[in-house]
Image (cartoon, rainbow, N blue to C red; front, side, top):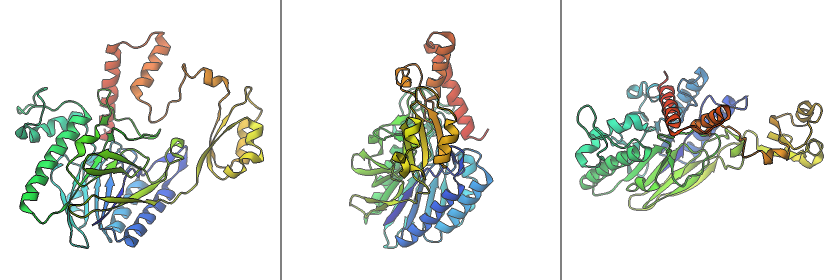
Length: 407
């Protein structure tokens, strides 16, 4: 049975002011071609479909078109990530066309049953992004009967609460999945394929600068070992394609289809073709995504930057870092004359290296608690106290939840 695993489309996102709608539409065209050419049975979209909870109209239209076109050739299973509003993305899920399955709710052990061209049956378990503060209550009511919930507190109906962590809620979800798989194996001795879709930061994964932090209580990761017991784990959240070591299973991040930060300039943007048969390890291979324009970086003094030394990068989306000790005259204008697609032009003199301990670049991936703590230390002259850090942590986690809910 053949799957195509993709994630982190971030429809509606820009790159340093460049509108990426045209390039995201080209990626959808590419996906449709791959699905048709590779005779894909099921397309898996593992979260962060949109870039924000309330997406622009153009992004909604593009997703609608993508689902309609893909479902002409294969089943589609899609779930929400930490950038999406689960409620908005899941609107209308029960009335979508046949072959399109949008799962954004916490009934994680209710799989999507799909059948391949070869007759193989597969159970796909889509996890939306599991927000610990919400999932620890909802999942506790399910897993308490299995004795898997730690004794940290109680829900209103008497269910034992899970720990307030990504590890606890994802682990509980996987306990439910493994129990469901075991029941089905007793009833279906001929065998079937099992797939879990999860949007999470798994230990061992390599992040980039463009993933939004998902820390709760200061911890953002999930141990890889919680995903044992299934054939394939289709991961979303990290933008670089990579495999994660899960005992007894094959687990991969497909990565994002486009680069959304200069830290991704070395990524091989792709989707993953996954072949699985019952009783055998899954095999995977990457299919390269179209590259609209190469990303690169130039770090040198202005005169060198303008010379033929860097002529090969003049058509790139480029980040230019000027190392001149004194600001050259008209440096921004002169750089853009030679590099018409320069997205970032910054001064980065040699003295900046000596100031690195005092100043650091803030990116989308920066932990907002760390950034706010640094600012507090800068203003007050003293590092934040544990109580102040706790207030900052709670505030940012609350704001993150409200944004995902579209409030």
